[in-house]
Image (tube, rainbow, N blue to C red; front, top):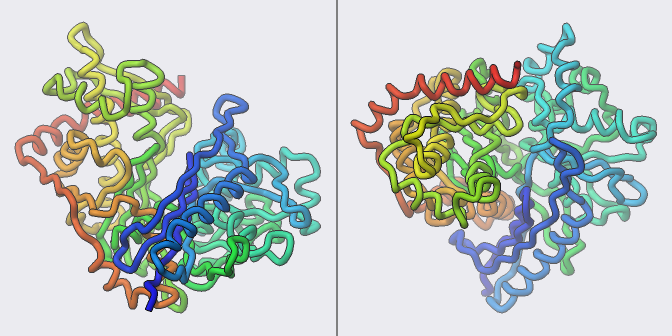
Length: 501
């Protein structure tokens, strides 16, 4: 009998990857293709949805072809996607009416300020679980309706469709203009500011607040369950899993119990902590969001802290300042010194996200003296990533009261041992990296495979998880960093004050 496999499509910020996984969670084949980044104005970040769709078709077809030599049957397709990135397209032609507005984009700042000043603005946090912010898809959709000629008129007539990237891909995979299925899952819907986080349905109050016609919106479905049949890849494959990328990583890291948490260190860093089936209201700057939902089961919730700049800060040191030639060199440079020399970097290149949510904040380097070298600056860059993690964990602890037994980590920056040790010390908590680093893709595969019985339950997925590395906190260093934390907080306040001036 042939083995059964799952195809996962990970549609990310810089590339699209298609990976075939076997029942043991091992990669059978992988293909990847980057797409272009468009920066038409300061603060604007865009992608071409048609290019991403073409890349999805190509990488999926190639991965399936490569896996065919393994004599296995691909029984399901799961999708993980860059969240909040917004696409609006013509229902009849399948063509986007503008390029996709990426989650990093800040063009909605004035709109967000206007909406936040309304006397009824508190309804957004009350219903959606999150404050009004340009980070989420709802304000981007409102911007499109206001800025693109005739977009609102056409939307109200039902001629346009909206979706985040998984919705766009599922619609195209299932036929597009010829009967494409217009759906999203609860995790992506929760990132729009348009869904009631308690009922997991589009909220009339929120739609009215943001001025969004419901005719634009996809149907909300569970993360694990049948979403449609992918007919665009040759032989039909059931699409049975969809998760926003960070929720997919939580799923791939087998964080199924309340308190368990993961942090993905990529372009930004994203920390999610499972809070179980009870919604935890945030008061300290983290986000109340949906973790996942299995068909026929209650929604599982999470608290999230999203940090815009993590790996992007290392890229700045490499490309902007030219202090290193490749990203891995930062660890070697940082190890030439024993500490940061009193130097702190606050990477608020386009404001600060969780837990501060201050779009006006601006990046700064504080504490410079003649003693500071490029080694100190490199160390301060790595430490900034760790300090931001501590900010988020502190906010979550204040909201949930849940202990953090360990932090499971993934993403490209987890190969940096100096950074991972700093995170363990600054949190005073063990940091653990899994054997399979592609946790986003793996989470999408797990979701799809669960729905078709490839794995019996989440317990089977937990048994698939294995540790590859662990960094334990050093007590003396942890105590030193606790005493140093107010200095970091002062630097953050300066960053905000600079933006206000």
